[in-house]
Image (tube, rainbow, N blue to C red):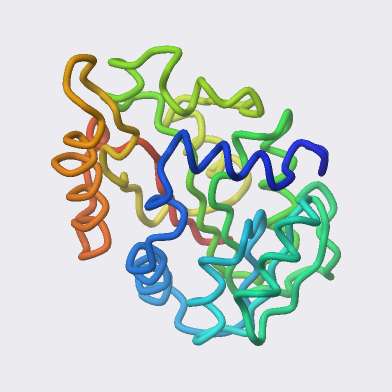
Length: 236
């Protein structure tokens, strides 16, 4: 993973592919903070691959928040959106903190970009305290969207995605690296369009937006009906 791949153009393209709502919908990130607080209500939180800082806007209200990203563009944008978060440019391969420093580590849309995601999981474990929480979100290759759209599905279409494992593959990786999986859920069908002959606007209105709204209100979808696999695991 190199910084030049994740400049402003990459994020503009991502928004175009997935839809601006997925990245910036405020209730969605607020919902994620609420989910995480059910397992760890406070302490130090590190958001790896923090992007433009949308999640950290919420997280810093409840945690001593840290954010890191390989992209200088992202860090500059995150500075604009956060008030208290400590931000730095860096890679998940070498997290610049000591052992057992964090209570929570979040990796939204990160591990699929890596050649060796297991090494990254091990590095996350190193900086987590015993009993600390690892929260990850990765593309769900078992979703209806992946089956319907094939090479046009967001998980396959993004050329920076290097590791698209089966859901059991991700869960096994965590368990083999001394994590206890506490929760597995999925985030809805938002990768419109799905149906070739129906205008995308209608699919956004009747599929994407309801999926995101319901997730923000607490719905956790089953495997087929979520484009991302979401996992919360405890460091043993």
